[in-house]
Length: 91
Image (cartoon, rainbow, N blue to C red):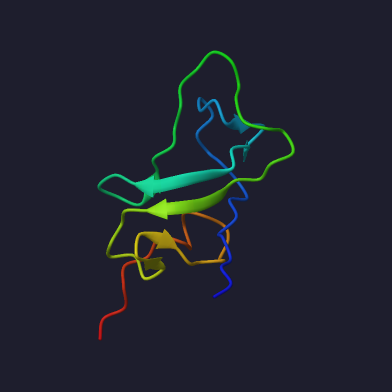
């Protein structure tokens, strides 16, 4: 099965080491915590990541998200998080 990763097109966490000019420059983030949000935040004086990378969502621990398949994000919907993290649809 071919997988498509959800690309992160903007980051609003200005103090994160991976945020450079509103873009996330790490290979992938984890979505988690009690609410669907980036769980990869890193506070550091020096900026990190690679300037030529655009981050994607990898692991997701939000079980109620309809795009969560075995704790992997199967969404290719952008932007995140407003569209990506949604509760599962009622049956």
